[in-house]
Image (cartoon, rainbow, N blue to C red; front, top):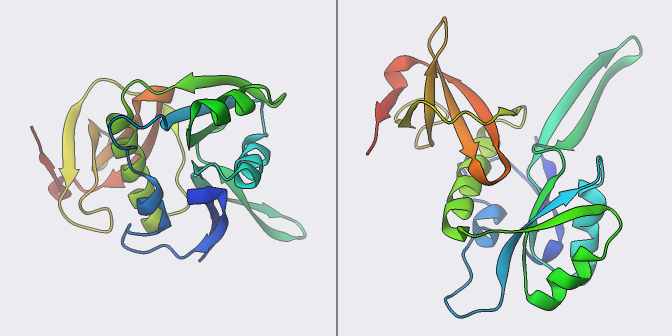
Length: 196
């Protein structure tokens, strides 16, 4: 299954889910020390994430918009749509001038400076890995409690998150602290090990 994914340079590509090493890996990097390019989180008006991603494409601003597959069943058949995983949020690397131009867009509610780009980039890399395994993920409100674990077996192997017990098995949450959202993954309790 392929899907559109906004990646470096703002270009739209079709990306096959793989082992997690795809075009997102090239984009999800921290700018070098001393660079005036920095990570920003764009908080958009509802349902305007893709239009702002297209604007970034036109402006040659590298952006990352993680997308999930939404499937609805109607009497007339099944309909699939690609929707932003984090409704209202888009991530980009921009210099101050590009940031200023973005801040003037009417579909942008707020341009949020990322104070811990290393942390955000690592969290987004984990999200990209999970999306390479399954495009039908969803988000929940951010969960702060719980132990950090790494999935050691199964399709989500290598992914680091926070664990919470559920009735059957365990649920690992991939948190993006900056925007206060979590992506739940169902895993067998034997597939996780504590870290740190």
